Image (spheres, rainbow, N blue to C red):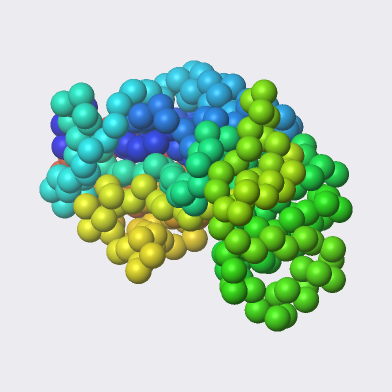
Length: 324
């Protein structure tokens, strides 16, 4: 490989990608982060549950992370990677929509996921404001208010039972004839109201959610709604390079983020839909440590090959006690 080959190309500059870049750049690896600038949590004004950064705007966290990465020599590039291609036995090309080709020994994909919401008029416009998905992220901020959960299956019923921790006034919206007797009994036992029917639209006034209008015209007053979305990973790059993908579209990886393709790693929501910001950052750090160990093995093998060919070790690889 030529001198312009990075040790690691990180695709995605969210919490997972920047955390990995920080660890790797501090380990003196050459790191390039390519980010399209469209974070999943961009609509959210604040993030919660991140120790020492609770209530921090997500954009501020990313700005701080970018500054830290560049301080240690990491390179940031704005753009969208359109394809990852093998380059020889162990390297890769990352093709950017600007036309650039990035050469790297390893690739870490942290492209996250997108939230697919029910097709209800007004729902998407209120996303991350008073239409929410994570009670652990936002429940405290809407506690003791009139809340609702929009659901259509067993997982949504369990989700509603969790949301119940934050309020005594909760309504569960569900299509007709979906609830089982046991599910209905559990909801009633915890004083969760049940509204069965089709939702027509959200009622918004003065830029505030006021309620949920049903198909029969009835309006159920609500201050905020929780919606368990369908998570869809941004895994096209991973599928394109040949990584194993399960039936639901999620890449398979070991606990450190190593995929089935040697040299390709993953971290964050692209592999773990339940990861919060702090979890994604931790996964990025763990992947970086494992990834660096993988590069060290490669470095050792390369050094042994060169030594056996009669090449002398470079001064930077000479043990300290032998340095003249």
